[in-house]
Length: 143
Image (cartoon, rainbow, N blue to C red; front, side, top):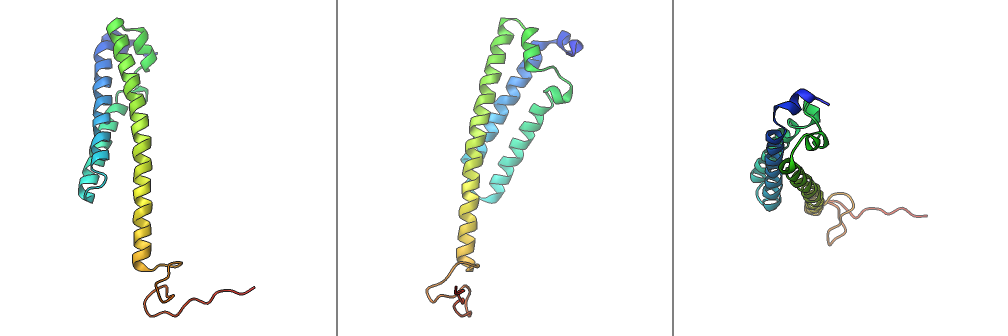
């Protein structure tokens, strides 16, 4: 436990963590709202989310700061309420990010299917039984 950091101001550090989790939630909302938009907009929203996540990681144990449980022990009642809000935000982040990840994977699969159909890739036949224009029908194996 890094007691030097705890002696400074656990409540100020908790407020920074709470603000960072709020920014990550905002970034997730932004990315979710523009996932059907143009690629430039999606890339900008993803970059914004990445920046917010980097800020949050700089406030955690990986950056040498105490864990949330340690900060909670060193805090007063207000600090404990902030810890509860942080945990609530982290739960929301986990739920939203898993839902967004699933949606983006579905969009990627739909895009790949559309490309495969449009280009007539292997396994896709047109009305004449060809895989691409100009080719004859594929010979099927016999048993």
